[in-house]
Amino acid sequence: MASTPSKDYKRREREQKKFDKRMAREAAKAEKRNAEIDAQEAAEDAADKAEKEAAEKAAEEARKAKEEAEFEAELEAERKAQESGES
Image (cartoon, rainbow, N blue to C red; front, side, top):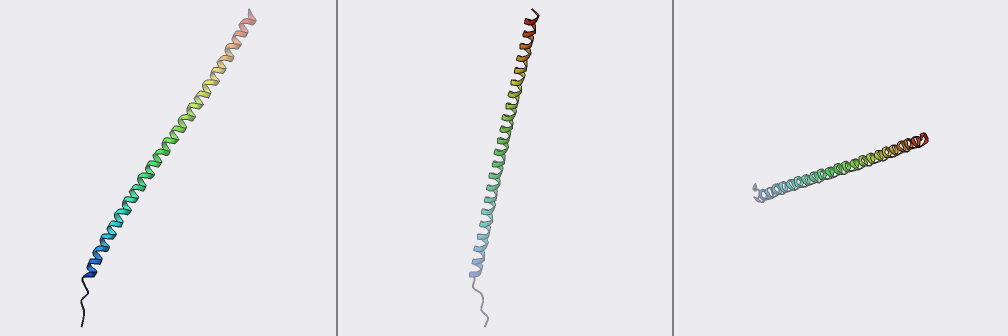
């Protein structure tokens, strides 16, 4: 005599299906969260790089300004020396 399977397997299949869906949702949430963290870190790195470049540019401009001021001072000193030598 053939026996019919119990209806318990249908319940187990439904529960497994729900479990699989839940796991997929959680995996998607985790992936989204990781993507947001990566994007935030990339933005922070870009901001740090821009800040560093700006600081380097400012230092270079300050160095050039100092050299220009020294050069102008030397020219002024030479001019004064020539004027006092001529007088």
